[in-house]
Each structure stands twice: as C-alpha cells, then as structure tokens.
Image 1 (spheres, each protein chain N blue to C red):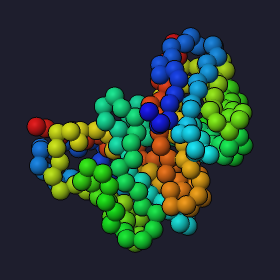
Image 2 (image 1 turned 180 degrees about the horizontal axis):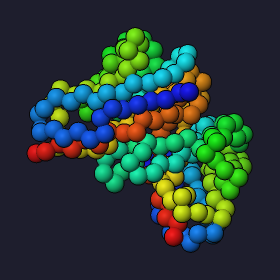
Image 3 (image 1 turned 90 degrees about the vertical axis):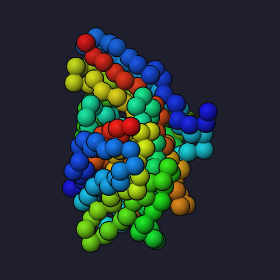
Image 4 (image 1 turned 90 degrees about the horizontal axis):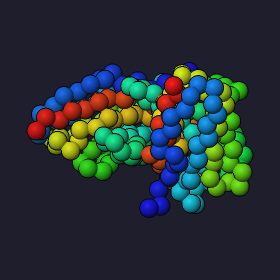
Length: 116
Length: 113
C-alpha cells in the first residue's frame, strides 16, 4: 500500500496527558497537511508543511499543539495537556506541489482521539 | 472569508434514483474544487476535481460535477445511484496555490436497496 498512513488509528487518553500522532505521506509528496474532523462536520485545516518547513498554521492550532516534519518525510502532531474538546479525528493528507495535480490532497485513515 | 457550504445534510434515495448534491463556495481569485467521499469505516477518497477548462468534470464511479462560476456552485451528480453509494460526501475548495482545503459540512447519503 503506497497511500498515506497514520499511527495510531485510535488513542484514548486522560485529560491532561500528552499525545503524539504520526503521519507517513505518499513517498514522493512534498506537502503534508493536518486536519481535524469532529462528528458531523467537515475536516478543518490545522497546519501544513512543504518539505520540512511549516508554512501555515490555523488559529485552531493552540499553543498546546505542535507539529514537526524533521526530514521532510513523516510528520508528528503532538497535543500537550489534552482537553476533552480535543476529542476528534485527526487527519493527515499529502500532495505533490506543481503540475496539474496542484492542490490534490490524498488522505490517510486518521487517528481517532478520545480524551476522557 | 473563504467558505464552502453544502445545503443538504442528509439525503435518502432509492436505488436507480438520480442524485444531485449542492455545493456553493465563497472564494476570492482562482479556485480549485473537489468532491471527496467517505464510505463507512473508510478514509476520505477523491471523487473528482476541477482546476480549469471544461466546467463539466467526470470522476470515478459514474459521478460528475459542474462548475458554474456565475453561481459559485460545484454540484455533484449521478444519474442512477446504487446501494454502494451510501456514504458521506464532502465538497472542498482551495486557492490556486494549493494550500489548505476548506471543506463543506458534508452530506450524508443513504441509498435504500
């Protein structure tokens, strides 16, 4: 399977704990995106990288959230001091900059987070 | 502000019925438009996309969508739905730079056999 992969698929944590999610994009893709999706809503943009540079962050991304893409390949999204409102599906997507496919993002299966 | 709206939250159809799901966008400048589908228990998959050219785009599984610039719309259509089309459908848009996608709230389609 050469699609976008995410790990773990499910995470249950207690309020106040830190959690970290990993995303592995499609191998030749240079852009990587994080989104959050709550029940009954469409995905909402959090942040994106071009190679290892984080180019944009949403206002949804509070100081408790941090994302990295250290070598321009996989990415991690960390949430510190989790709150119940952080419960959601966290989606990763990747795309290839340039050419006719610009903006076409391919999504992973997501990590479902439940904060108790 | 950039936004995408889907007016139908839930749609129930019988097999062989025709489908049209509405999508309207509010975007300045050039816009690229997408429809994604999420089958039960699966991840988001691209159905079709519009970047430029022919405003009628055809996607997978018999779906098509028409970009009508004057109406700021990109409605999804299928002439005859099947039970296997039961899923949630999301319209999305991005600017020409291919940055963040803005999604609509989704339309949950149920097709009765």
